[in-house]
Length: 115
Length: 117
Image (cartoon, rainbow over all chains, first blue to last red; front, side, top):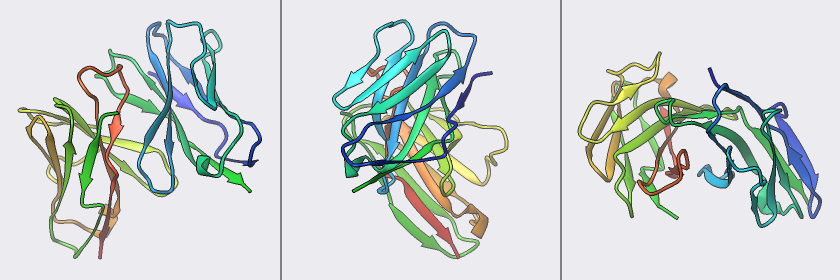
């Protein structure tokens, strides 16, 4: 069975600095997708970034980038130039088409960006 | 991006009453929607997969008769919490994937906070 582990329940960072959130997963599949979702205090979940497992190049979306290590089954999220609006819960999620198309979620990391 | 709207955002009801939560995909047709439950400071727990025109698929441990799901059209799924009790108080979130979207990339509603007195 697939599992997703986020080992950092809480993290904090100073505004304008860089922070990395960790995520590891376990699967025997070869073709899958990985996601980072953000849930701000408003509670609506928003997609931050996604990575297709068949792509070697790490995904980047503006200040957000990932370090995808397929062999190590690691998928960390780096937030550069942190902003106050980045304060949120961040969830790592795993998907493959064979699992009835369901996302497997990590437990989340609560990130606080301090002024 | 695709828009999913959920209503109501907050609802308070008395114990024993039923509450309906609506989830709409505003700019795409969603043959499948997902209903989640989220406890404070915890991850999302998948309750059921809502399938348009057919019965919902419930996750293990979720009471079908307690949480009724109806997906009568390609843009609307409803979750009805029947005979609600205080332990049903929670944050309920729906999501859907556009047909042309990337596998697993979901769009979420705003969530509905249910408080049962």
